[in-house]
Amino acid sequence: MEITKVTLKDFRNITNIDINLGSGINIFYGSNAQGKTNFLESLYICSTGRSHRTKYDRELIRFGEKEAHIRIYVKKANLSDRIDTHIKLNEKKGIAVNGIPIKKSRELFGTLYTVIFSPEDLQLIKNAPSERRKFMDIQLAQINPIYCNALSQYYRILKQRNNLLKNIQKNRKLKETLFVWDSQLVKYGIKIIEERQRFIKKISEISGLRHEFITDNKEKLSVSYKPDVSVNDFKEKLQNSIERDIISGTTNCGPHRDDINFIVDGNDVKIYGSQGQQRTASLSAKLAQIDIIESETNQKPVLLLDDVLSELDEKRQHCLMECISNIQTIITCTGIEDTVKKYSGNAKIFRVENGNIISES
Ligand SMILES: Nc1ncnc2c1ncn2[C@@H]1O[C@H](COP(=O)(O)OP(=O)(O)OP(=O)(O)O)[C@@H](O)[C@H]1O
Ligand SMILES: [Mg+2]
View 1 (cartoon, rainbow, N blue to C red):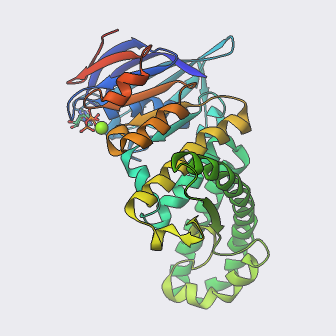
View 2: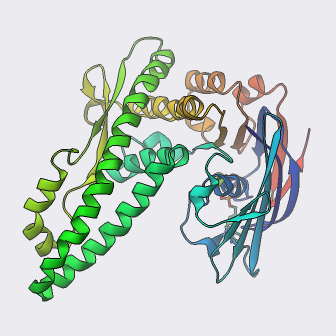
């Protein structure tokens, strides 16, 4: 699939733009703080219903304005969809597909698949476990409506259970009502564990191949899922930790404590890997996301590369550019690097300056 046209009004520092994108590589270059990431963010919002940078929609509206608008057209085969996002200062944002408003962001499924890649993603292995859960969740939620639903229900129930635990500290009698939340938590938790298991198995296979390619067959990468509890013992472990949970006022076990391990040549790369090995393994895992979307949905995602090329050495830049040769890619950079020039024969080039986007093609 590809994004053909983008119109923004009062989105972050962008007052008004209306541009047509090319079906291959699109390069947005400009100095710092001009609006490059803002532009990518607007596309990501149309894909997932939320920003990758903030959970506060009001931040997306240009300072001093009351509303922001994003309109994009997405082409797949012979069909074209229009996605309109209307962000308001004091109301929930509205999203419509072909003029029909959607109620939940999961109704956006299948309209636009994206993979976003920022320099922080290269820290995936070094970062806290929450980042690795995010890596699973963002991807799975985009391609799997059952997962998306289970995840939002799970976190809703978890929040309510944690509130109840704090209230039990003051009133022990409330403990009798805990089982209502626990059975729901286990039900949705098991679904999450099952889907994550399946997903990580695939990521491991595909990122292993990518990693071999990037390292010239010198390293073997595998990815393993480290669930905090298993499908079989979640219920029991939750039961056993009730007293501890009441004392701490929080739920101490469940998939909200899951993690993933990256193993290079038999060793945990988070513990034993060099910085370069950690970054390469992160890159391999990120690239695997593109293949997974393609194999699960039969659609090529749009790749959003936010200033990531300058973070990679020449060899890895080449690998990345090879991998994306047949999908629409939107690249932001401060200067047009040599690698980009080499691969961007047919690229469309845009200059980003103080919230304006000027086509140079
Ligand atoms: N709601 C808003 N209204 C107006 N300006 C905003 C708003 N939110 C952010 N900005 C401004 O947008 C500017 C550009 O941000 P952006 O993150 O897109 O920069 P960038 O071009 O990606 O820069 P860099 O190369 O440093 O990553 C920043 O100066 C920021 O202050
Ligand atoms: Mg930026």
